[in-house]
Structures are given as C-alpha cells and as structure tokens.
Amino acid sequence: MARKSSLIIALVFATTILFAGASKPVEAFSVDKDGVIHWKAQSTWIRGPGHQEWADYFTETLNNLCKGQLVIDKMYAGGELIGAFQAIPACSKGKLDIVSGSGYYLSGTLPWVSLIIGTAANYMDYTDAYLGWQWEGGGIELYQEYVDTKYNLKVFPACTVPAEAVYSVKPVVKKEDFKGLKIRTTGLSMDFYKTLGAAAVTMPMSEVIPSLERKVLDAAEFCVPYTDYPVHIQEVAPYALTGVLHQPPCIGMEIWINGDTWKSLPEELKKKVEYAVKLTQYWFIYHMGYKNARLWEKMLDEGLKVTKASPELQRWMNEKADQLAEKYAAKDPWAKKILDSQKAFLKIYNNYYDYSVWFR
Image 1: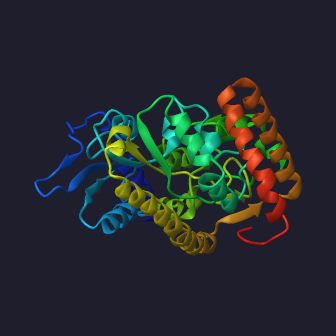
Image 2: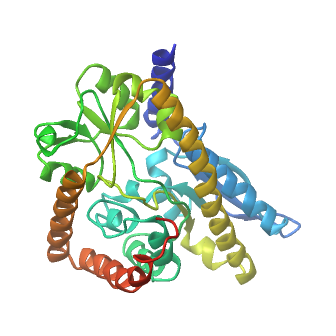
C-alpha cells in the first residue's frame, strides 16, 4: 500500500505539471465597492502537507493582519489558474498579484539565485546566520536588486528549510562512493555533485521514486521528512547520508508580489505584508521543525539507515564547495557580489556566534 500511495502522489504531481500550459485567463488586482483590495494569488505547489500548507498559512496570517483592507480570497495551488512553473513570471506580467513559490524556479533567467537562497557553494551554513544576513545584513536588498534585473517583482524570503539528506539505494559514506553515482538534483547542486565525481541529472520530483525503483537512479535529494515520508522514499532508497551536503539550511521558498501591485499598496499595508512574511517564517521553523522530527522517527522505525557525513567527508565536500564559489565569483560579477556580501556579514557575525550557543 505504501508503494502504491507514493505512485499516486507522483501521478498527482505529474498531472499538475502536464497541464501547466493549459492556463485560464486571469485578471489580477481588484478593488470592490467598499474599497477592499482583493489580490489574485497562486502557489507553485501541489495541494497537501508541506509547501501548500505554508502558502495557506501565509494567506490566513495576511488576511488576519489586514482586517478586511486587503484580502486574498484564495491561495490557489500550482496549475489551478496558471501553470506551476509559469506562475512567478506571470506574476511579473500582472496576471497574478502574488505567488508563493521558489526562486530556484527562476534559475534559467537568474542563474545565481541559488547563491542567495541556498546551495553548497555559498557561505551560509546556519539558519541563524541566514536570517541575520537576510533581514539585517543586506540579503533582502541584494536579492531584490538581482530580481530587478529581469522581473517586475517584489520578493520576500519567507521560510528557512533544514539541510537536505541524500537518499540512496546503496550506502554512500565515503568519497569513493560518489564516483559515477547516478544522483538526481537541481540547479547549482548539479555542479557540486559533478565535482565529487557523480553523474548528476535533474528530473521532476514526480519521476524520482519510479526512477529509484527501476534503478535508473542510485541516489536523490528530495526535500525534508515532511514531504519525503508521504512518498515513502525510504522504501526504494533505504540509505540516507546527512550533513551539510548539496544544500545547507536555505531560504527555499519566497513570496512574490507584482511590482506595480506592490507600489500601489498603502505603506500601512506594506508593513502588514512584511509582518505576515516574518510570522510565517517563524511558524515554519517550529511547525516544520516538529513535523520533520516526528516523521524522521517514523522513517527510522521503518528501516531507513542513516549515516552522518564523517569529518573527513564533510571537509572534502566543503573544500569542493569553496572551490566552486571561487570559480563562480571569478566568472560573473553578480556571483561575486552575492558571495562577497555573505563573507562580509559572516566576518562580523561569526566573530561572536562561533563562541556563543544559539541555534547551532
């Protein structure tokens, strides 16, 4: 039954993507006769626990804060109004007012977005540092500046996600195990695993479980237990490597608002949008944190065999990631600007928190 459930979930996800191009005409941003602003909203996620739950929480929080001045009548799921992968660009064009989605989806037009929101080749290894850089160290301003080069969007990073595990059909515990390893990943993480000697490929999440079952893949990064457990990935890939691998704690999911919609909003409501983002980010840490821990326990009970990266393996991976960061910085001014900003922030931040326990 568990295997059957995972395939059904995969088929639902695939169906969402299949109909991504069959979008309905959308009219965004309206004001009713009572002066209430109504935003047209959609996520890039499928319905269910995890991502869409986060989008719905943000919607509820914003509506409560705005007390009828600004209303999101419904946060549609990916594909319900506009194709999931087209939602953020469509928001830029005014077809939607607001989107709950990930900047990773814009890697084709913003190739260095992963350096901002999370990849091995950036310098942000801890959640507390990420939040500090984001809200106080210039991270949001830099992200906005980068987005402005291609899109008419206001962006708010609105969650933090723990470091992801790598699931595999055979143990992966030492450097030699990565040689020729057929691993599914995305974005700049493909570069990272290729430097380790792996045969990195990308594919939709809907194809991961069947590919592991057929041994087309040896390994995969998926997400966190809250989304991993429902598809029963531990049944087809019963080994997990943990540590700071391809993706340390990251931003992962953002709120995107059409630029003109944002500019037209009164300052009082702009502040409430920001408050809703911060409250959602805080909720995500404790809610997702607890759910992950409980479901990880279930995965262990059901036979998942976990290995934490040894100090030697972690050091090797960190060295490879740093080499990639240096390569990216030398290659492109935007990559250099992003990485220099993180280094400058961490020089000050870690001067204290390397000696004081907080989130670490």
